[in-house]
Length: 221
Image 1 (cartoon, rainbow, N blue to C red):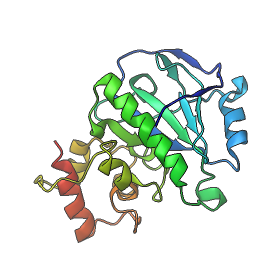
Image 2 (tube, rainbow, N blue to C red):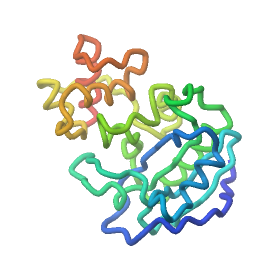
Image 3 (tube, rainbow, N blue to C red):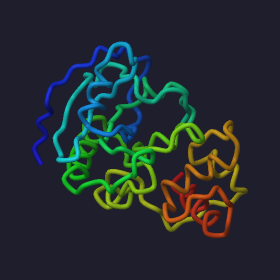
C-alpha cells in the first residue's frame, strides 16, 4: 500500500524531549471522524496526534513526526513517563465504548498496518514497540479497546506476538516486567492486559488463563 497522508495540520505540539521508542494506538471515541479531526486541530482542546486513520482507510497527518504531539497524556511504559516525547501517536476513527463500539473496518486496519510497518522500519523499532493507549494508562484509558485486532497486526509484524516461552514469577512482578506501571492498582492493570491479550473476557480477575498469558507475554523479555 502506498501511503499518501492528507495534510491536516494541528497547532497542538511542541519539542520532543527524547528519541522515538514507541508507537501508541488510540481510538478517537467520538461520533464521527470529522468531529475527531476538528478536535485534534482545535488549539483550545490542547490535544493532537501525528496521524488519524479514517474508517474508509484515508490517512491524515496532523503533526510532523519530529514534533511532540499531545496524544498520550499522563502514563508510563517500560521506564518512560513522557510517552508524548517517546512515541508516535495514531488516532483510529472509532466511536468507542461510549457510542456502541463497532468493529474496525478492514480498509482502516489495512492503512494502520501499512503506517505502523513504515514507522517501525524507518525508526528501526521492534513489533513490541507498538502499544495501546490503555497499556500506558491503565484505569484511565481503555482504547483502542478489546475489539482492536491486535492478532492481525501481530501476524503482519506490526505488534508483539504471543511467545511460547514463559517467565517465572508473581503476576504483579511480571506485569511490571512487561512494561506496566502498578500505580493505578493491580485490577485496572490486569484489565488493560486483558484488553490486549484476552479480549474475550475483560474483568480484572487473575484467573488461571490470565496468569498463564501474563507468564507468556513476560517471556518476550
